[in-house]
Amino acid sequence: MNKSKAIKQRSLFGCGIACVAYTLGVEYERALKLFKEGRRKAMTKGFVCREIVKALERGGKQYEYRYMNRRMKNKIYEKGTIVFIKRSKKYTFGHYLCRAEKSWMDPWINFQKNKDVIKAKAGFRKRLPGKASYVILPKKSA
Figure 1 (cartoon, rainbow, N blue to C red):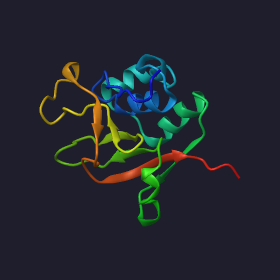
Figure 2 (figure 1 turned 90 degrees about the horizontal axis):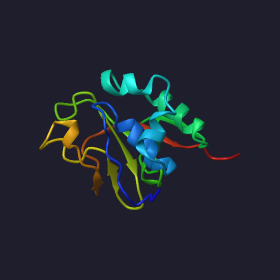
Figure 3 (figure 1 turned 180 degrees about the horizontal axis):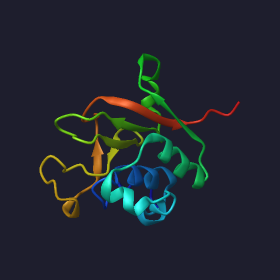
């Protein structure tokens, strides 16, 4: 899979799946299978950071998650990092984005213009569209 191609989410709460797919360089459907109860949760409530870390582990990557604080501020710009944008008026349930080379891969970039997930488009943006509250990053080998 070409990592330079953005991956769109295919379910209302599928942004975490799309970020896992992008990080692993696999198709959305392949990443979906790495989540326990993935299809159901992608339609009903989404995923917490721990579930994304587990899916990445099943895909062969070692990641960990942390609450966003000052020490984490510069680490979110490392390629392969996934951030969770906290819930807001704009993102009622929050939103996951993945760090690409010099931008953020957004699995539903046209969300503000079109709230129908069937018409979702993925793309890259320069800045985060909200405040990051959690960061999921590669574990450093000791």
